[in-house]
Image 1 (cartoon, chains in turn yellow, green):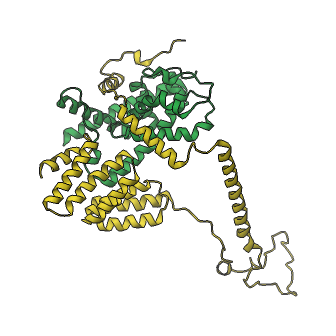
Image 2: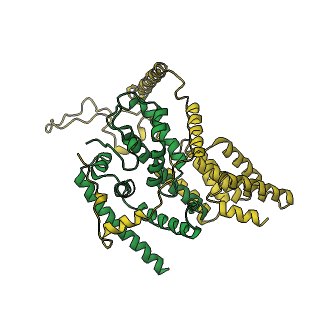
Length: 273
Length: 192
């Protein structure tokens, strides 16, 4: 069966189809990955697999561990459920309003559900006397809250130009979200380093950028960290030594990212020394 | 009909394999195709190396569950599509957070042609991806698969899990929307 390719249909250049086809035709085809790039990718995959322990354990052992974890989780869940239910069975400390023994029974409407002693209380009192929950399931912070806090960091940094306050907001974000969903841990680290740089806390920024570079091999992170560290080193002083240092780091950056996002600015800085 | 071929990388969309797959074999056969999909789906700002790395790590984790209902290429394409979508979302955050011009500058022009031509080509590419950015994901994907990957309607339908006629409708709407968006961008440029 021959596959009909719509691509083979020709359209007038004035039609949307023709115009769009023309636009896409002008795009350059992506270059295949070079041997150097492939090498970096392979090293990255191997490093991550080693870190995750993937492929090292035999499958039966992984299943055993997985089964054990599942069993453990199930037991933990069962225990938690018992704890959760336990207080409900315990006698309530709330005063029970009992009907007097001689109280006349209503003559009519016996079909209506008879109020229980607790229900006889006014709602407010019932609420007040309610048994406090002993174990509340941990409610994870919402994505909206994470978005809100991160937005605040951005606003302080990019709009209000307050890097010190942005650092405070970032610290709050980190305290609140130990497993953030919008940024990875290393991205937060690099953001913090950049904020330290913008706050002119150069020694701390250098240390932080060093830590980021040691922890991550992701290209985008490495690029930001290398360039940021060069600027932080420059901020440490205006002596010739510092400029040499800056030059060294900028060269390192340019060597690693000759066509990177900051390369043009790095060359300018290098030339302006 | 199973996806049999992809115009520019037929071996990648080879028939479903009977023998168990290894990560090394998947990588050897498909790494270049994954890089190309990542670049095309993600646009000029995407970190292709990182995406490729992530795709094969995900593939490694899911390999045991892969039953061969689709070809390995189809399976890898779907992983690439997911990883790229997540990356783009994160990239938007990153750009937003950094807020610097350098962050949005994109990669350097290619070595082919004069610097001026390369710059123009880069600007065209950026404008096109900028127009694609706000579109519905499925429209964006269909356009890229059809116009850049040169897939047939049947192949796109297979990948998207839709009917061929539906893909045709999406493509028609996507083109019209892209043209509208580009015209609006041109008008904004003129107005400046």
